[in-house]
Image 1: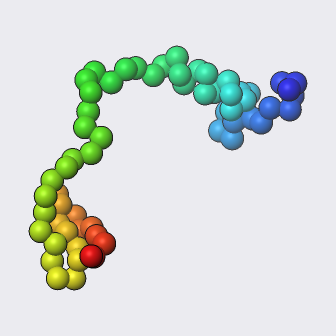
Image 2: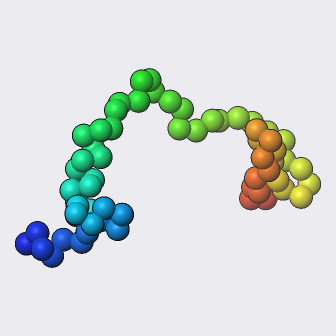
Length: 63
């Protein structure tokens, strides 16, 4: 695909989106250590079916 057909970045019109992405990738750094993507914890469900976790309330399916 010719460069003229590639879409321009909305904030920096001198760059294409692909150019901006490539530039950003060179600036990214690795995360210093692995992190947990989820937390597995057994909780009690109230009669109306929400759970409370870390000061937030989440709805859960009933059986």
